[in-house]
Length: 338
Ligand SMILES: *[C@@H]1O[C@H](CO)[C@@H](O)[C@H](O)[C@H]1NC(C)=O
Ligand SMILES: *[C@@H]1O[C@H](CO)[C@@H](O)[C@H](O)[C@H]1NC(C)=O
Ligand SMILES: *[C@@H]1O[C@H](CO)[C@@H](O)[C@H](O)[C@H]1NC(C)=O
Ligand SMILES: *[C@@H]1O[C@H](CO)[C@@H](O)[C@H](O)[C@H]1NC(C)=O
Image (cartoon, rainbow, N blue to C red; front, side, top):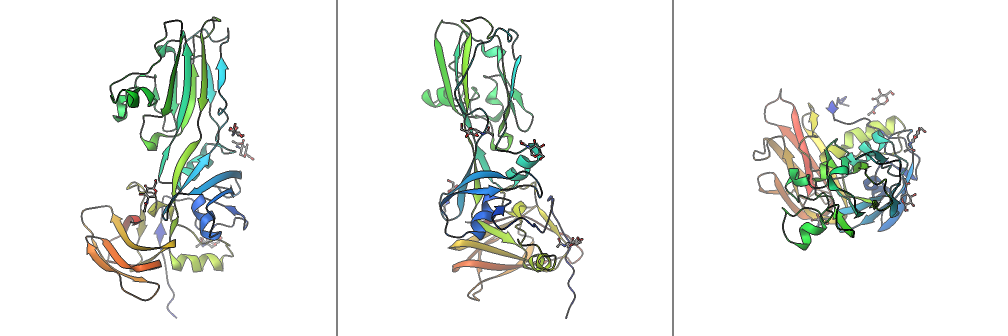
């Protein structure tokens, strides 16, 4: 028997996961082990030995689902309080599920794209006294969201109503009337979720605002990428779960898998049949590897375009990736079922 040696490095905390059988590290893993579910609340534990939260995971189509994370500011809450005369003096940190920052970061790594929204109603409160901090550290005032080119207002309603990305928010501060702004945050997905709300100048009884933060909605893949060799190792280590390589499923070129194994064998599994997939390396334009892929009926998948493969409908494909230069490191960033 040939002793195999696998050196795989990820931007990833752990390989073999020993979670209990009804506790999962992600919605993807929950759907992988509990096949046939469409809309379910699962016990999710993003970090080994960390907090466990009940999270709703809902299937959208054959390849993606949406996870809904709730938070501590979902009820429309009135703020009008003599203690908060100064701008941005009221500070509200948003807590998601039972997760601290590290746990939420780990959960986010298992998802591909998130969106989130909120509602804010203002009465005699100025835009310049309110501020929003996102998970990536970006802090903006309500009309400073143009940074990502989505809309000048930090939430989308007025932008959509007027079909104008240069539109500000409805809130102006004056006018002795209520203004309502709501909708999804006008920042790119990688900045989400919202982390802190800072409100102020709501000390006079005529100055007030109401706020409500919506659930964080994140897409997660229903397919999995695993390394069969590694799964064998995990079983030897008594892990009940095989490691899913989220870095290859997150649609992000910053998180890749680096391997010196030649060939590297990856397995794609999907609960519904699929027929095409794409492999993305560091250099997207250049498929710099030699690849053979077999579906579980033993058929070879054909490369129909650069690094895009087509097979007969199948639920599982094993891909062997050979490096062209032997002393090179393989760098694979994403494997996408398309
Ligand atoms: C198996 O366990 C050993 C000892 O705890 C550890 O060093 C090794 O990395 C584990 N293997 C895998 C594939 O996680
Ligand atoms: C599944 O839904 C996601 C999210 O709405 C979408 O991005 C993706 O293209 C859909 N896939 C298919 C095969 O329809
Ligand atoms: C978020 O809001 C929902 C609905 O109000 C509530 O059930 C849940 O407990 C809240 N989550 C947190 C972390 O406070
Ligand atoms: C997660 O668990 C730790 C330790 O049990 C606790 O200190 C922390 O507050 C928890 N996080 C949340 C958001 O409850």
